[in-house]
Structure formats: C-alpha cells, structure tokens
Length: 203
Image (cartoon, rainbow, N blue to C red):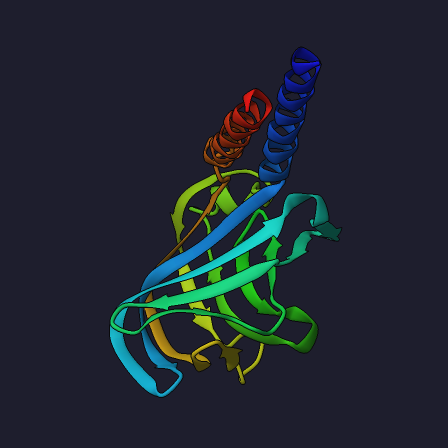
C-alpha cells in the first residue's frame, strides 16, 4: 500500500517537472536597456539607467508580412533611483525583419502608442534582420526612437504614468528563462510533502 502511494507521488512529481519545463520553454523575456530621461509617477529622472522588460509566450508570435508581433504577458519599467513599476496597459513586442534597417519595438501597437523602437541601420543590420523573436539574442545596439509611431507614448503603471523625454545608448536582448530553478522548487515542495506524508503513515 505504502509502495503504491509513494510510486504515484513520484510519478506526479515527474509529470509536474515536465510540465514546468514545457511552460518555461515557451516563455521569452525581451529587454531594452540604456540611459534615459522622463517621468515615472510623480518622479522625474534625468540621464539615468533604465530597463524595459517584457515577457511573452513564443507560441503566440504571429507573422504579419515582413513583421513579427506578440502581445506581451507582462511589461515592467525599472528606473534607477525610482524603482520598478508594472505597465498596466496591454503592450506588444513587434519586429520588422527587413534586410535593411530592421527594427524592434515595444508599445501598444493597436493604438499606435510606442514606448521604444530600436533600429539597426545597414550595414550592421544582421542580428535583427534574421531574428525570429522566439530565440535568445545577445545584446544589439541601434538608433533608439521614443513615442513612436506617433507621439503620446504615455503609459499607466503601478507607480503612475510613465513616459520618456529622451534616451541614449539603448540596446536590446532576449532571454529564455532557465527551467531548472522552477523544477527544483517543485521537487523541494514534493519532497517535503512526501516526508510529511510518510511520517503520517508511520504514525
């Protein structure tokens, strides 16, 4: 009886780890970082490091002609000296895969509100021109634009409205989160549960 009980428990643990790994594999993190000036809530900032981070499900990436687009699951902004805020409006990550002057964009494409667009001008336009938005990408630089494709790039966040007035030294990169830590956490939780269950059975 006990053998069957623990065999089932370990089987469920293996299934949980496999499902966690699959879930992690479909998640990607897009990161824009650089120096910027603007406002976050009631605080203004001037020429300080910032990071824009968006997470998305790679299975939701769609092809739109020469462009790729995905609706982000989450988006946050970190500003040195102020902190991190979650962007509460829906955002997209959007890429134009042009052989000349490709760009990648973070904003609200459906309402033509942009936070950041980074363009790689030829002849250094190889990384973004072939980037599939579903794979890791080492940091690439380019020419940044804010509030594109038109002005009005003000986004509500958990700290108040956020907007840039200027940016410089911007780079873009993409990362796939490691599944090992999530799987390890599940393993620890199951191990504790099994030990407690064993003690209960013995008692």
